[in-house]
Amino acid sequence: MSSEERREEGEEEIERGGVSAELVRGGILRIRWVTGKTSAARLFGKYGREGRPDFFRLLFGAIGGSLRSQFPEDKANELFNSIRNSQSFKDSLDEVFNSMKRWFFDEIVPKYKLERGDVFVISTTLELNINTGELKWDREGTQVIYWVRSDRVAEKCRELGIATAAPTGGEELDRFEEGEG
Image (tube, rainbow, N blue to C red; front, side, top):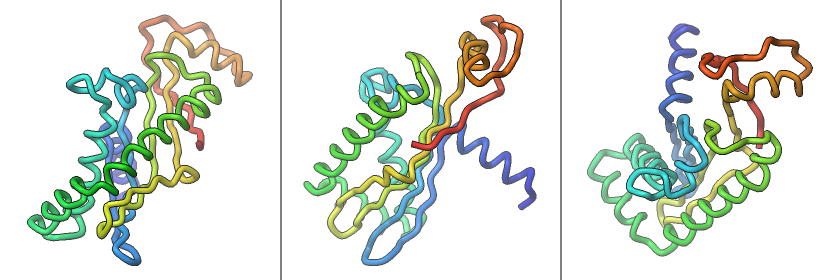
């Protein structure tokens, strides 16, 4: 694969989201999950599809895709159903959602001064025990990429010490900040 193809693949993963997985020791499925461009209201709030946080739909897709990448489809579906119905999965899923949401609003929002409507991508690693259904989130290995809205570019540039003309509200923004959580 050429460097141009890898760059395009990386851009698409950021735009739409992506997942990769490997089966490691003791039935642990390590999942690298990229949410794709989203907003806090869509990912964590009631403004996702059908009034539910998109977090759950995206995560279930990442888990299902990860299982299918490691097992034949019928075995992957059987595992997914077993895991999804286990109490350990339900409890740990709630914990991962709540801790990731707290981390985002308590640490990331103030650190980057994110505002309502800002767009970002979260790239993280999860570990799923396929025997018990327990899900764990690697908080330390989580990164956030966010885009500065065009109406805030001048302010951001001043903060960074970059001289620029004030952007108009309709300007396209092709610049983003990358930070680690």
